[in-house]
Length: 311
Length: 260
Image 1 (cartoon, rainbow over the protein chains, first blue to last red):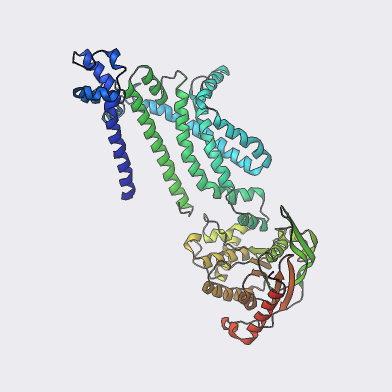
Image 2 (cartoon, each protein chain N blue to C red):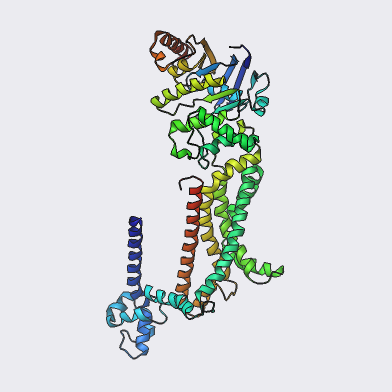
């Protein structure tokens, strides 16, 4: 356990170091522009000239102003510290002020996204599991459905998302909840389908023969052998599926003019030039995904333990 | 011992069509198995011993000849739960305890809950696994797992026990022990047992009848009525009588197998 923690922390530390080092070159132009406006002497002095000077040259010519890049209001690349502060300002601090559900709170936006994720996950896993059962039961269904399932994943979801929104409003579905869940389930169902097909087919020929010697019916074969045998596979795909559902929900918020949800925060942050908001929303989404996957992982552990399987 | 015929095979043939042409897994195999017999099938890989067992169990469909089990077709025999089958791998469900693994056929066949409990208790005692009912398969050794799978095959009182190399994956010491136990079990339950094996000592030690088979095409090259007494301690294997039978089996194997 401590060994895992140590290796995770090492990678984390490396990322933070690289991140901090990258902030200086990424922000040097913005920092110099700001310093020039404040009247400092910059080399070269005009913004137009600076545009053609490589970053490293700018840095070595204006060493005194590198540090300013670490404390900008609208940095190209914020420091981890700034992201952390922004994240705290829009979550924990809001809770302390009693404004948890304010439109500026990421908890509010995270909750909106989480709801779509949940419904998308529910819809996606249902489609995935039912599809897998049908595919395993019938060769005809396998040959007719499987190619479409694969093709569906080759279509970029960002291209499909606006159409789903337009079409669902066309058939009279109000609000963004349903189309978002649909987009989310579109990404989520595939790993579940593939994993379940594999899981339902995991019993060996010998295990199937054994049931034949009992003259077991198809339903018994399914309930007593295929279904329980597929459970470990199911959980593995559920963990991939829920992360995909979250990504789907966020994508569903991007091209739709939504004003609530983590996806909307990212888009608005981009349009209004507030990179801190983008980064904070990005991290909120990552943390949310981590929590969801961990929850499923724990459930898997407990459930398989109780079933006697070593997970 | 009565002479009621349990299994009757006449000119039984089974040909698999493969990409490399037809494979004659069985060709013109004729054999009678009587009630209470312990019949071993021995021979090299590809001689059709497992295929013959699977034909009895209706897991394979013969392409020629005829076979009856309990006087009816293998399919009807299977539907009437005439036999219990023990596979090479114990094949216990990892998500079921030993008790619930034995319960599996009983659930499928629709026994009442009380009857299930009583039967589980009885067969687990029979294979000396009482007290392990609540353990999961991975908590048991390979030999114990195979005993549990025998208990599972015994649970629904089939008169015939078909065993396909059940001890093939176990080490020799465990195997000796299980062979001894199996003989006791056979004496106690009076079942008719068909037993596939690779091992000459195992076949000679266990059986009343040894069927020696040879490959390409799979056929019977010798049927040996075992003259050893029914009561067999493990050290019977050091007696001259035992070695004589083993020798005849070896001869049969050699005759049916040209090492060209």
